[in-house]
Length: 326
Ligand code: PMV
Image (cartoon, rainbow, N blue to C red; front, side, top):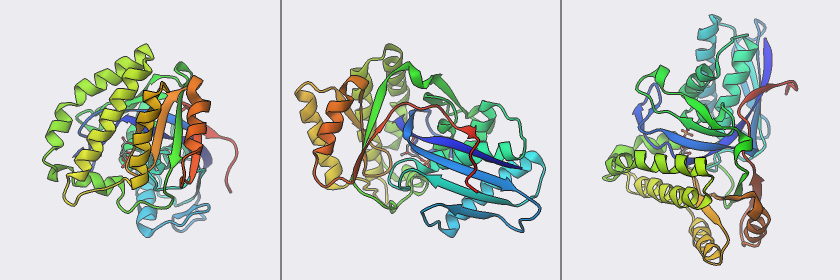
């Protein structure tokens, strides 16, 4: 009754920001993302009658009681499916700093779902796994299928799932991740999006979604980096403008974030094909094709006062691995 899974974080090209149903985590809009090769979570879960209660640890990081409770609640969902009340030991390890706008909850809940189900011998389909992961953290459902993924918003728990649009090998894109600030962000995305409806702009955001989703899908189909890039920058500005206009307002960017967005426009005006996208944090994801990886990385590394620059390729989704963490 022990299993280990690895799951990638994902970068949202079309972002999930706001729920239609808080308990079921049904989103207000469908979203699209790419799994990231360089930001992964490995999780081992063991259920045993020897454990008197759940014990949950994250290697190299501290966890709050609230975070542990969220993991335990997700274990309850898995236990319920398997019809067991056994407690579990969970050890999880990120190869990136959590809470910086790199979707640690996405890779975390995807790995927990896949490892937990495997440990209890549950034989769920990929679709069922995405539905279960979604209940733990919305964007986690997109870290289960391979490569480029759509989360269909749906209208009920069973119809809100994620699937792979294209495998990781489909398009050799890069996400050069520029970390401008380490450490936990002050407002989590879960808390942040709770205030969505306080923004006078939220309905306009949702009204424009279908068209934007169609453009990103079109860009993926044609492997059109310019159409993809222009649309994801528009989407980033839209999501953050809505977040800034909420009450209380959410300012996820630092001056450095804006500086990078400006300099990327300058690089582009000189012919380098690179675009920005930013999730709920200050770090900037630079999206380009493989042919421009070296130039974009070199330029990103020449920026002053940034913590790190990491290269991500499209990655496969969550899967079971052989090496247990304990
Ligand atoms: O799934 P959560 O609660 O971590 O929310 C993710 C929110 C964004 O990262 C801002 C957008 C997204 O779709 O990943």
